[in-house]
Picture 1 (tube, rainbow, N blue to C red):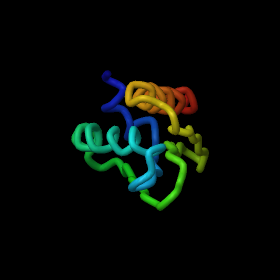
Picture 2: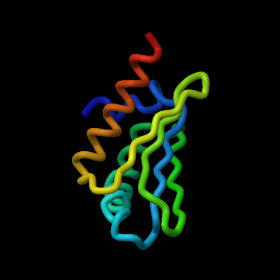
Picture 3: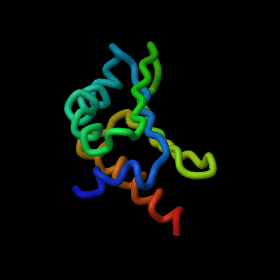
Length: 98
């Protein structure tokens, strides 16, 4: 899981959108609760934004160089699948730099 320490090298910003109360966002909330501290410790100056809005569909957004953004819907995903989606976004950032 070395890619977790490369967020700041391959991305400009990470945004997690979720609802504070809806069942569809429960896995995204659990992911943030369990992993935010570790990701922030590994990438202390990297902006990891958690945006809460009532009724919103859970999403994960990555912003790369030149304003390029990629988003993934998180509804119905497990925490493991969310981790895999984040890993894919980080790897996409690495490939965009080539």
